[in-house]
Image 1 (cartoon, rainbow, N blue to C red):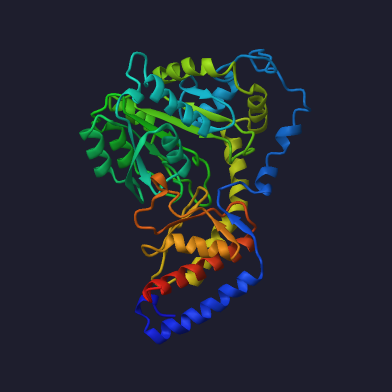
Image 2 (spheres, one colour):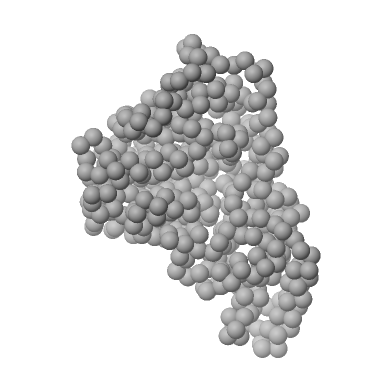
Length: 425
């Protein structure tokens, strides 16, 4: 089939009839497929079942003798801090282990900044203008935190090697109300981009008019490689320290897509001053996290090599699903000029760009055929994609067969939507 935009009117009519027939056939099948979120599938969760019975249910004392059944241990038990400091590439004293959700830690850190400021004696963000830069397309839950807390968001373009740094540098240097930036630096949600050394260095060193500027560094997918050599990511904490901004970055991560999505461990890391700031506020919220979960994770993974070996098992489950998406996209849309998509080497998502003005209609049509996708606009602040073109694909949860069906439906919907646009309908 030629490029859709180059078709003659008779060719467009024939294509619409053929695609419409295929679309109606899928509608008649009453399928119900959900690709809205990047949830681990049951086979991935099963990989960690040994964590529940490996210690015979009697593991409750930490290496230092702490009874993990009781209160206390605000920032984590020593052996867990040592393991996950290695995971986060920081020192143990630069790490706090929280509950099961890094999103909770990110929300709390931003709320503390709004209510109390980012350091002892600093002015709360809520008493100043507060703006966060949002590389887009990006993670919708980051943007939801800002919207919930009343923080203004400014989108900046996301490139293959990270955010548009010229825009970021100009905005940060020119306005004291610009207080920070969200970053998913490795296998970014949803594009799969990995920040280059240049981007990491510029984020660390750039002038910021706000002395309390913070980078919210959500390294959610740091070990989530699909194949080949793992992507390299420079240390933002070391870069900030070297550039004279040791307190500029707050790092976050979790085992939510490593062990159990609802019962993993979450981490916050940063300079000793930032960790003291965080522990001060945490002390009013909790008497301590789930130390038994920390013990289970350490007993199961043992060390960083154990985590990496475990992630190879995840990759063996996930890669065929990503391959299925890319194969069907190429078969349905390759060479037709109606979509571009990423080919990530890790993470949980594939990002598709349709022609401008098509994404919402595509998602609507797919829903009406029984395929639920992330709402169009979700990867942008305020759910507003200025070009209405981006669609996020989350292949992890469905089976390979269901993924093939879902992407075939998506391909049909993209082509039909573009044909409708060309004909002014």
